[in-house]
Image (cartoon, rainbow, N blue to C red):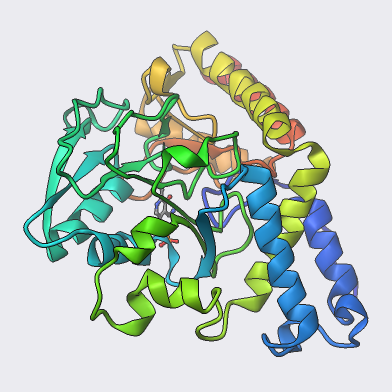
Length: 363
Ligand code: PMP
């Protein structure tokens, strides 16, 4: 049976659009992975073809991000949300404190987990202006265990243009919604983590990149699965890994490499966000951007229309035109267009044209 497929432009915030070549590769390889006559979902995770695949995924992460050799690359489960807890459990020592920068809902959730396990303190916050910017970061207490930031705020549409200098205090970043969207200097971080379901692949796998000295000095006596040491020692195979999610991550990263890597994708991402912010700025009688200009995200563009009734109509008409996933997060409302790596420029162009026509009709 063939089902007619409508052209859709997928602006969901995550799970989100995946590169078509990565999906087509999965389709081709589904019944016969690497000449095994089986799908990758059916292979033992200890089999040679699967082990080679996971090693390839790790190599792609290392090559694309330029991960230094004293860092471990881990593929874990439990989402970015489990990292909110694992970080303080492993790294927030008793009698010491950790700093958190509050830039949105996910940052606040990470902070709340920190409070459960130790002395977590707010270093800076933009909550009083509805998280519309990345706040200035005051000097960091050298006695702190770590500073936690959220590099891109998926719900509010803000992103760090530059990362804070924390001297010798390890900088920890939740990069769930902008990992691999631009080049970064990994050596400036103690730990980076990201749920895969935006820029890396489907949900089900969480990427963690952690410097060896942090792993070594991590707390002992934790539940085995919650200790970074366990996963480092077992090379992400302490228990059964999410094999299919890691397979898809491999396909996505291989596609990214073929595009020319992170510099190339950053250029494409800037072109996409510039086009959309340009429309928002040009039509202020209909659209209002949420984030301050100096904090605007290239990944999640958040905006409102002049009233909620118009907003509801905008989202409904957009959907009918094949522009899917434009409603803002359920906690804040408004509109949000997520422009992850895999979103083609043509989709942004289609959205911008729709917004221009909508403004003409409703302005
Ligand atoms: N951090 C950020 C920045 C996110 O956008 C999200 C989810 N969208 C999370 C954490 C939570 O991720 P997960 O669902 O993988 O736990």
